[in-house]
Image (tube, rainbow, N blue to C red; front, top):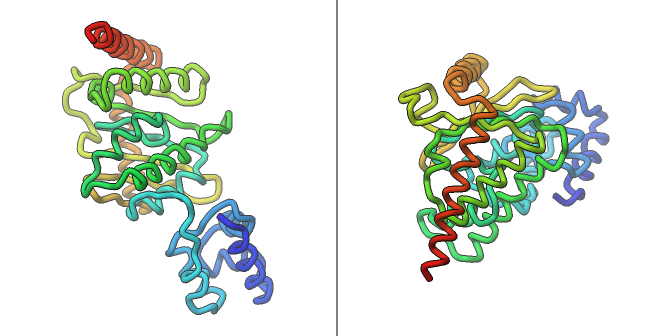
Length: 271
Protein backbone atom coordinates (compact mmCIF):
# COMPACT_ATOMS: atom_id res chain seq x y z
CA UNK A 1 0.00 0.00 0.00
CA UNK A 2 1.17 3.53 -0.68
CA UNK A 3 2.54 5.12 2.46
CA UNK A 4 0.57 8.31 1.73
CA UNK A 5 -2.41 6.84 3.56
CA UNK A 6 -0.29 5.88 6.57
CA UNK A 7 1.40 9.29 6.67
CA UNK A 8 -1.99 11.02 6.54
CA UNK A 9 -3.23 8.88 9.43
CA UNK A 10 -0.13 9.77 11.46
CA UNK A 11 -0.62 13.48 10.73
CA UNK A 12 -4.25 13.34 11.89
CA UNK A 13 -3.32 11.39 15.01
CA UNK A 14 -0.61 13.84 15.99
CA UNK A 15 -2.87 16.81 15.25
CA UNK A 16 -5.37 15.30 17.69
CA UNK A 17 -2.60 15.05 20.29
CA UNK A 18 -2.88 11.28 20.54
CA UNK A 19 -0.20 8.65 20.92
CA UNK A 20 -0.51 5.42 18.94
CA UNK A 21 -1.67 3.66 22.09
CA UNK A 22 -4.31 6.29 22.83
CA UNK A 23 -5.66 6.06 19.27
CA UNK A 24 -5.62 2.28 19.50
CA UNK A 25 -7.64 2.43 22.71
CA UNK A 26 -10.21 4.77 21.18
CA UNK A 27 -10.51 2.75 17.95
CA UNK A 28 -10.50 -0.63 19.75
CA UNK A 29 -7.37 -1.77 17.89
CA UNK A 30 -3.83 -2.70 18.90
CA UNK A 31 -0.98 -0.20 19.01
CA UNK A 32 1.17 -2.40 16.76
CA UNK A 33 -1.57 -2.49 14.12
CA UNK A 34 -1.73 1.32 14.16
CA UNK A 35 2.07 1.42 13.79
CA UNK A 36 2.00 -0.97 10.83
CA UNK A 37 -0.68 1.09 9.07
CA UNK A 38 1.23 4.35 9.60
CA UNK A 39 4.42 2.73 8.28
CA UNK A 40 2.59 1.51 5.17
CA UNK A 41 3.13 -2.16 5.98
CA UNK A 42 -0.56 -3.01 6.33
CA UNK A 43 -3.87 -1.85 4.92
CA UNK A 44 -6.66 -1.40 7.45
CA UNK A 45 -9.90 -3.26 6.90
CA UNK A 46 -13.03 -1.22 6.13
CA UNK A 47 -14.18 -1.68 9.72
CA UNK A 48 -10.78 -0.52 11.03
CA UNK A 49 -11.01 2.59 8.83
CA UNK A 50 -14.50 3.37 10.14
CA UNK A 51 -13.29 3.07 13.73
CA UNK A 52 -10.28 5.29 13.02
CA UNK A 53 -12.54 7.94 11.46
CA UNK A 54 -14.78 7.83 14.54
CA UNK A 55 -11.82 8.02 16.93
CA UNK A 56 -10.23 10.96 15.12
CA UNK A 57 -13.45 12.79 14.22
CA UNK A 58 -12.50 12.79 10.54
CA UNK A 59 -15.95 11.97 9.17
CA UNK A 60 -15.55 9.24 6.56
CA UNK A 61 -12.25 10.42 5.08
CA UNK A 62 -10.18 7.41 6.11
CA UNK A 63 -12.94 5.09 4.97
CA UNK A 64 -13.50 6.84 1.62
CA UNK A 65 -9.82 6.94 0.70
CA UNK A 66 -9.02 3.42 1.84
CA UNK A 67 -6.63 1.99 -0.79
CA UNK A 68 -8.04 -0.81 -2.90
CA UNK A 69 -4.67 -2.53 -2.70
CA UNK A 70 -3.23 -4.99 -5.19
CA UNK A 71 -4.80 -8.05 -3.62
CA UNK A 72 -7.77 -9.56 -5.40
CA UNK A 73 -9.67 -11.74 -2.97
CA UNK A 74 -13.27 -12.56 -2.20
CA UNK A 75 -14.88 -9.84 -0.06
CA UNK A 76 -15.64 -12.35 2.71
CA UNK A 77 -11.92 -13.24 2.90
CA UNK A 78 -10.59 -9.67 3.24
CA UNK A 79 -10.57 -9.59 7.05
CA UNK A 80 -9.02 -13.06 7.25
CA UNK A 81 -6.27 -12.03 4.81
CA UNK A 82 -5.25 -9.12 7.05
CA UNK A 83 -5.15 -11.43 10.06
CA UNK A 84 -3.10 -13.99 8.14
CA UNK A 85 -0.47 -11.34 7.42
CA UNK A 86 -0.18 -10.50 11.14
CA UNK A 87 -0.24 -14.01 12.61
CA UNK A 88 2.73 -15.57 14.35
CA UNK A 89 1.19 -19.04 14.14
CA UNK A 90 -1.23 -20.43 11.55
CA UNK A 91 -2.86 -23.86 11.64
CA UNK A 92 -4.77 -24.77 8.51
CA UNK A 93 -7.24 -27.56 7.88
CA UNK A 94 -8.13 -28.39 4.27
CA UNK A 95 -10.87 -30.76 3.21
CA UNK A 96 -10.70 -30.56 -0.60
CA UNK A 97 -7.93 -28.23 -1.81
CA UNK A 98 -4.38 -27.38 -0.79
CA UNK A 99 -4.44 -24.31 1.53
CA UNK A 100 -3.93 -21.06 -0.37
CA UNK A 101 -0.56 -20.13 1.15
CA UNK A 102 0.88 -23.51 0.05
CA UNK A 103 -0.43 -23.49 -3.52
CA UNK A 104 1.78 -23.41 -6.63
CA UNK A 105 0.94 -21.11 -9.51
CA UNK A 106 -0.47 -23.82 -11.80
CA UNK A 107 -2.53 -25.38 -9.02
CA UNK A 108 -3.91 -21.99 -7.96
CA UNK A 109 -4.75 -21.06 -11.55
CA UNK A 110 -6.72 -24.28 -12.02
CA UNK A 111 -8.69 -23.76 -8.80
CA UNK A 112 -9.44 -20.11 -9.52
CA UNK A 113 -10.36 -20.66 -13.18
CA UNK A 114 -13.25 -22.91 -12.13
CA UNK A 115 -14.98 -20.19 -10.09
CA UNK A 116 -18.60 -19.26 -10.71
CA UNK A 117 -19.60 -16.98 -12.25
CA UNK A 118 -16.68 -17.41 -14.66
CA UNK A 119 -13.89 -14.82 -14.58
CA UNK A 120 -11.91 -13.37 -17.47
CA UNK A 121 -8.33 -14.45 -18.10
CA UNK A 122 -7.15 -11.04 -16.86
CA UNK A 123 -9.15 -11.36 -13.64
CA UNK A 124 -7.87 -14.89 -13.14
CA UNK A 125 -4.31 -13.57 -13.47
CA UNK A 126 -5.01 -11.00 -10.74
CA UNK A 127 -6.48 -13.65 -8.46
CA UNK A 128 -3.48 -15.94 -9.00
CA UNK A 129 -1.01 -13.14 -8.25
CA UNK A 130 -2.94 -12.31 -5.08
CA UNK A 131 -2.88 -15.92 -3.94
CA UNK A 132 0.85 -16.24 -4.61
CA UNK A 133 1.45 -13.00 -2.70
CA UNK A 134 -0.11 -14.67 0.35
CA UNK A 135 2.65 -17.28 0.22
CA UNK A 136 5.24 -14.57 0.85
CA UNK A 137 4.61 -14.98 4.57
CA UNK A 138 6.69 -18.16 4.19
CA UNK A 139 9.74 -16.19 3.03
CA UNK A 140 10.57 -15.47 6.67
CA UNK A 141 12.57 -18.53 7.77
CA UNK A 142 10.90 -18.69 11.19
CA UNK A 143 7.50 -17.00 11.37
CA UNK A 144 4.68 -17.54 11.11
CA UNK A 145 4.79 -21.12 12.31
CA UNK A 146 2.55 -22.97 9.84
CA UNK A 147 0.85 -26.34 10.29
CA UNK A 148 -1.36 -27.87 7.61
CA UNK A 149 -3.80 -30.66 8.41
CA UNK A 150 -5.00 -32.21 5.14
CA UNK A 151 -7.73 -34.69 4.39
CA UNK A 152 -6.31 -37.40 2.11
CA UNK A 153 -8.77 -36.19 -0.53
CA UNK A 154 -6.57 -33.09 -0.94
CA UNK A 155 -3.80 -35.36 -2.23
CA UNK A 156 -6.04 -37.59 -4.34
CA UNK A 157 -8.21 -34.94 -6.01
CA UNK A 158 -6.65 -34.40 -9.44
CA UNK A 159 -6.58 -30.63 -9.87
CA UNK A 160 -5.17 -29.60 -13.24
CA UNK A 161 -3.90 -33.06 -14.18
CA UNK A 162 -1.14 -35.38 -12.89
CA UNK A 163 1.66 -32.94 -13.75
CA UNK A 164 0.12 -30.08 -11.78
CA UNK A 165 -0.56 -32.38 -8.82
CA UNK A 166 2.97 -33.80 -8.80
CA UNK A 167 4.42 -30.29 -8.83
CA UNK A 168 2.08 -29.18 -6.04
CA UNK A 169 2.85 -32.14 -3.78
CA UNK A 170 6.60 -31.84 -4.37
CA UNK A 171 6.33 -28.16 -3.41
CA UNK A 172 4.79 -29.12 -0.08
CA UNK A 173 7.47 -31.77 0.45
CA UNK A 174 10.19 -29.15 -0.05
CA UNK A 175 8.56 -26.82 2.46
CA UNK A 176 8.39 -29.63 5.02
CA UNK A 177 11.96 -30.74 4.36
CA UNK A 178 13.13 -27.13 4.81
CA UNK A 179 11.43 -27.09 8.20
CA UNK A 180 9.17 -24.25 7.08
CA UNK A 181 5.85 -26.01 7.58
CA UNK A 182 4.45 -29.15 9.19
CA UNK A 183 1.96 -31.23 7.23
CA UNK A 184 -0.21 -34.00 8.64
CA UNK A 185 -2.58 -36.12 6.57
CA UNK A 186 -5.88 -37.53 7.78
CA UNK A 187 -6.11 -40.85 5.87
CA UNK A 188 -9.38 -42.18 4.48
CA UNK A 189 -9.45 -45.04 6.96
CA UNK A 190 -10.00 -42.60 9.83
CA UNK A 191 -13.59 -42.27 8.63
CA UNK A 192 -15.64 -39.51 10.23
CA UNK A 193 -13.73 -36.95 12.30
CA UNK A 194 -13.95 -33.45 13.72
CA UNK A 195 -13.79 -30.63 11.12
CA UNK A 196 -15.34 -32.68 8.33
CA UNK A 197 -17.81 -29.88 7.56
CA UNK A 198 -15.54 -27.13 6.14
CA UNK A 199 -12.06 -25.68 5.90
CA UNK A 200 -10.63 -23.96 8.97
CA UNK A 201 -7.75 -21.64 9.76
CA UNK A 202 -6.60 -20.91 13.31
CA UNK A 203 -4.36 -17.90 13.94
CA UNK A 204 -2.35 -16.68 16.92
CA UNK A 205 -0.83 -13.21 17.39
CA UNK A 206 1.71 -11.38 19.53
CA UNK A 207 -0.63 -8.67 20.75
CA UNK A 208 -4.21 -9.82 20.39
CA UNK A 209 -6.33 -12.88 21.18
CA UNK A 210 -6.34 -15.84 18.76
CA UNK A 211 -8.97 -15.98 16.04
CA UNK A 212 -10.37 -18.55 13.64
CA UNK A 213 -11.65 -18.42 10.07
CA UNK A 214 -14.00 -20.96 8.52
CA UNK A 215 -15.13 -21.08 4.92
CA UNK A 216 -17.77 -22.81 2.83
CA UNK A 217 -19.23 -22.22 -0.64
CA UNK A 218 -19.31 -18.45 -1.30
CA UNK A 219 -19.17 -17.70 2.42
CA UNK A 220 -16.46 -17.17 5.01
CA UNK A 221 -16.47 -16.00 8.60
CA UNK A 222 -13.91 -14.72 11.09
CA UNK A 223 -14.57 -16.00 14.62
CA UNK A 224 -13.21 -13.92 17.51
CA UNK A 225 -15.48 -15.08 20.32
CA UNK A 226 -13.14 -16.78 22.86
CA UNK A 227 -15.69 -19.54 23.43
CA UNK A 228 -16.05 -20.31 19.72
CA UNK A 229 -12.30 -20.09 19.04
CA UNK A 230 -11.52 -22.42 21.94
CA UNK A 231 -14.11 -24.90 20.67
CA UNK A 232 -12.61 -24.81 17.15
CA UNK A 233 -9.10 -25.22 18.53
CA UNK A 234 -10.29 -28.29 20.41
CA UNK A 235 -11.88 -29.73 17.27
CA UNK A 236 -8.63 -29.16 15.37
CA UNK A 237 -6.61 -30.88 18.08
CA UNK A 238 -8.94 -33.88 18.06
CA UNK A 239 -8.68 -34.21 14.28
CA UNK A 240 -4.89 -33.80 14.46
CA UNK A 241 -4.71 -36.66 16.97
CA UNK A 242 -6.19 -38.96 14.28
CA UNK A 243 -3.75 -37.84 11.59
CA UNK A 244 -0.57 -39.55 10.42
CA UNK A 245 2.71 -38.45 11.96
CA UNK A 246 4.83 -35.92 10.09
CA UNK A 247 7.16 -38.66 8.85
CA UNK A 248 4.34 -40.91 7.64
CA UNK A 249 2.47 -37.97 6.12
CA UNK A 250 5.57 -36.96 4.19
CA UNK A 251 6.04 -40.54 2.96
CA UNK A 252 2.44 -40.65 1.74
CA UNK A 253 2.73 -37.29 -0.04
CA UNK A 254 5.92 -38.46 -1.77
CA UNK A 255 4.29 -41.73 -2.81
CA UNK A 256 1.24 -40.00 -4.26
CA UNK A 257 3.49 -37.50 -6.07
CA UNK A 258 5.42 -40.41 -7.61
CA UNK A 259 2.15 -41.96 -8.80
CA UNK A 260 1.21 -38.69 -10.50
CA UNK A 261 4.66 -38.47 -12.10
CA UNK A 262 4.31 -42.04 -13.42
CA UNK A 263 0.91 -41.14 -14.92
CA UNK A 264 2.38 -38.01 -16.48
CA UNK A 265 5.24 -39.96 -18.04
CA UNK A 266 2.82 -42.61 -19.34
CA UNK A 267 0.61 -39.92 -20.88
CA UNK A 268 3.59 -38.39 -22.69
CA UNK A 269 4.80 -41.75 -23.96
CA UNK A 270 1.35 -42.47 -25.45
CA UNK A 271 1.34 -39.25 -27.44
